[in-house]
Amino acid sequence: MKKESVTVQMDGEKLRAVKRYMEKKDADLERELCDSLQKLYEKYVPSSVREYIDESCEDAPPTASSKKQKEKDKAAAAADGAQDRSAH
Image 1: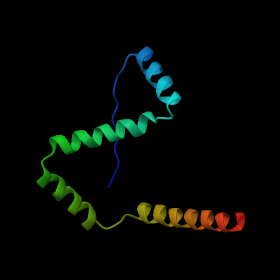
Image 2: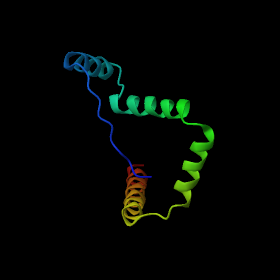
Image 3: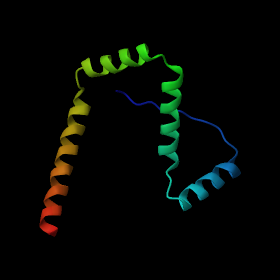
Image 4: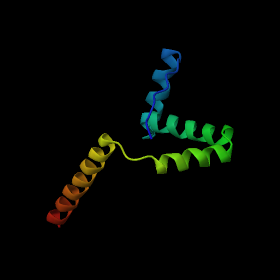
């Protein structure tokens, strides 16, 4: 599925504060925002629409860029596995 960006405005001082205190707790701002958006999606989008979207994503043929990314991911995983085995 194609990813899109969301831009929000927040007072700079408040943003710096939330980043600072999240960092102290090893929390990731982007991950937390993504989780919150997912919860909003599940709360407001009817389940039948979510199912339709999920099915249409599964049925869509993979694009050339997604195929390349999958190949890169497999190669990286294989390289990590080889490093793990050689470290033992």
